[in-house]
Image (cartoon, rainbow, N blue to C red; front, top):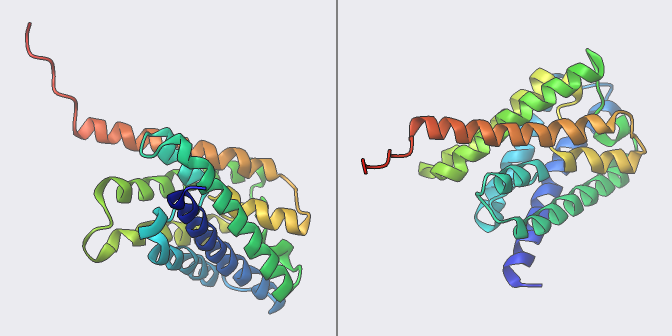
Length: 228
C-alpha cells in the first residue's frame, strides 16, 4: 500500500474513531445516568467533530464521513481512486469506536444508534437530507476557500453537527454520517429503519454538492466566448 494512502486510511480511521467514540459515549453514558439534555449532547457532538478535525485536517482533510467523501468526489474535488482508502478508514474507525464504547459502557441506548423519533420515518428522512446538505456546504466552504486565518473555518462542520444534534436529534437521532450510524447499529443489532440513513444521507450529500457548485457558478459565471 502506498504511503500517502496508508496515511489517509490511518488518519481517517483515528479521526472517525474519535468522532464516533466521543459522540456515542455521551449518548450511552447519558442513558446510564437517566438521560441527558439535548443541548449537552449537542456540545458533545460539536467536540466530537472539532477535535479530530483539528488533529487530522493536515493529514487527510479530516472527512470523517463517507457522505462527505462522496460529495467531494462527485463534485470533482478529489479523485474517485482515493475514495476507498477514506471510506475504509472511516468505517474501520467507527467500528473500533463502537467496540470500545460497548466494552467501556455496555450496550445501553443501542450504543448510540440513530433511530427515527418524532414524526416517524418520513420526518427523519427529510431532516437527514437537509442536515447533510448543510454539513456538505460547510465542508465545501473549507475545501474551496481554505481553513481561514487561524483555521477558523474548521469550526463550520462541528457547528453544523452540534446544531443538527440539538434541532433534529429528537426527530432522527441526527446521523449525517453513514459510518456513525452503521457501526453502533451493527454492534447493538439495531437495524430498525437503517435504510433511512443509508439513503437520505448520501442523497443529502449529493444535493449539497450540486447546490454549492450551482451557487459558485452563479457568482462566477464562465466568460462568454468572444464574437467570432
